[in-house]
Image (cartoon, rainbow, N blue to C red; front, side):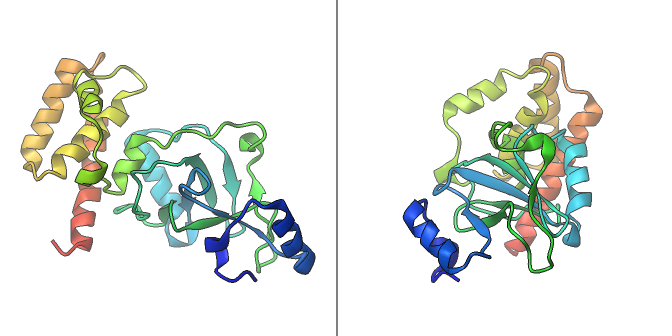
Length: 231
């Protein structure tokens, strides 16, 4: 309907009213990324998204409470604050999950899909009642993000080395493991370093079964990322 599609997204009320006057049946699209300030986790059940989301939660813990949309295709959109370090949308090892950032878009309620079904806000996670959560570091790490230009400041890694308490250990573990593996550290060495860090710094230490799940999940994502790069 609009030349350039979501690339010509605007918040100009006059222009929006003009578009809707011309096409009153039009849906609403949100350009994700820096332009809007949002990153969206897209769960597509047609490609295994529901099962992947369950595994993701088993590996890292529950997603933080945030605004959630139920899509017309039976999936979900979880909204998070924009993180400039995100440049990839794919989540290797977790089929049917995509992180929509710069250059992407999502459809907003109450748009009607061509299949006749409507996009709706999840009742307990509506935008007028629920704050937008920060994008979890472990979710970012699942995409394999860690280029030199985007690396975290030294202060972040100093905080990680100090360890974490309950509620922050899984995320800290995911960050540390991803950092080690993406720098070519041998898998067994990376695991031993992670175990020593957990036992010596975290208070209380993360249960070894939880640590293993997080480590193996990050390892799986890293293997998939390297496969996609042909390495």
